[in-house]
Image 1: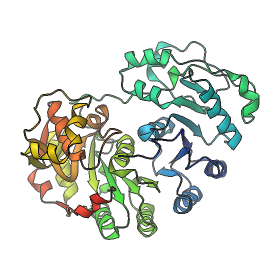
Image 2 (image 1 turned 90 degrees about the vertical axis):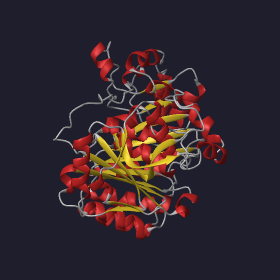
Image 3 (image 1 turned 180 degrees about the horizontal axis):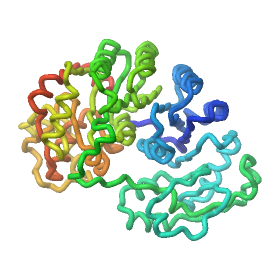
Image 4 (image 1 turned 90 degrees about the horizontal axis):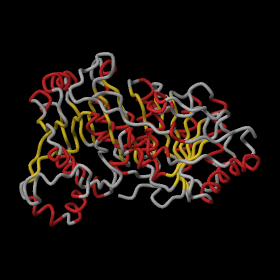
Length: 446
């Protein structure tokens, strides 16, 4: 799967706060005007409960620019949470984290990037008014995000840190160098007294939630992650309407919508529903991230203990929410639930999908517990309910996922890790309707 940014030099991730519309609009305009955006750079915006004028501008820019991915939420997610989401699909050589307190002139961003490019021994650098004095051990373990940005780092360093527990990750962080600030005057936009500092305080870890943690009644029970693609209004609007028309949906569910190259007509109808319905967040991408890329974004946005992952070619019958709540209450904790399908002729699958076996065998969770050629059980129809922590701690789907392998790979992962893969209970099964349209997958979206 070729995500945008594979061959790019830099991905700029910009956090836009909720209470600075004038400044935010200026920052958005300046970044969209950078000549390298869409060519050698990628650009992602995260809008944290934005004002209407910011949302409107982003809707217009999404239609005409074909450059940037826009994420917006009704609820306040916070900067650290949004950075975690934006970093999910980064495959460029470097990533630059900004917020709307920075005035990102073209020369400023170019100078920062060129400086690190010219100093490959630097794995990360940041800019702050006051360099921290000897951070305490507790502050190192909490790994706060520096407040004043920007932050520039090698993507490989972030990936290496993210894949380790905190004690191992600290060894990575300890390698990171101080930033040589001889170029402060050239950057221009930054005050001359800015100082660099080691990046051990940049990184963060996904919380590893114990499997048997009790469900918290104060938070949403389910995060719905709905992937929409292309121009299929008869599908995505039917699916979305079947979700939001359920009584009391806002009390128990957060709704996340990922829009992959969705047509203007469909996007307009989704926006209308977002204005009045309990939809938590929406991602607008003019680029086709494919389903796995959108899932990575949305799974990291999820705040509920369970994720209900959907394609837009399915819908619910009335009463599905009560059935889903009962199902979780009866079966918690479990890893994955769905309409299970058995692929008994694994040899046929491996022959038709020749790269699959070698792809699967290289996964970090692969333990060789089941030899190739035997059956695998997986949730069919691209619809499943999974524990959020299980997906995140095992990095599903990972950056190398292929859309035609995702459901089978999930079944393999649960089996290798001795997880609990269960059927939807009868009342829920009766209310989940899947329309499997083969032509959708041929387009690579979903």
